[in-house]
Image (cartoon, helix red, strand yellow):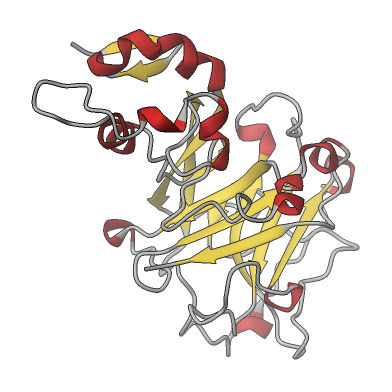
Length: 266
């Protein structure tokens, strides 16, 4: 029997742990990309960015124009503090950003910029012919996609280093079903967190990079996660993940100068 409590799915095997799951839950916006043309100001994966007067298209250290990976218009949905209520957040990656780039690639490979609501006006760039010779060989998204959003609350994910704050690690290998499925097995199936999303808990293939390096726990908020999906023609390396992390206080201040860019694949 399926159970939902405060909007959180709780499998029948975990009914007795519902208070721990609820206690760990945080807000998230799940992203559903649809192959569809977008207006300049709309949220999207790939495509052409909204560049108002005073904003320039970012370049990498080689002088090449970066490519728009994602554009998020916060007026299209709502996340509570510390996320902004309005404005546009843009994520760019270098044409040279390939699957060979390691975790937390240098700023040479990415750029995040925020367009304030006050900067959005009727004067914006329409001519993007300078992108005609773009190299898309390493770009992970094959088509422009319009984004739909679904609000959610998520319990701590199986790979997040904070899992141990809510569940004793010794329980992970305990069998909790008659067919000898462990706590870990059931948690893995239900709370992997492998979605396109803003906020919520992250998905990792191997391990949470913050667990072994406490100074990286400063990056406590998932700003954007994009996962490989064959059906959507989104693929990073061999079924990998692209994630951007930020400190919650920096986010609250709309300061996007300190981002942890995480790339991972099998």
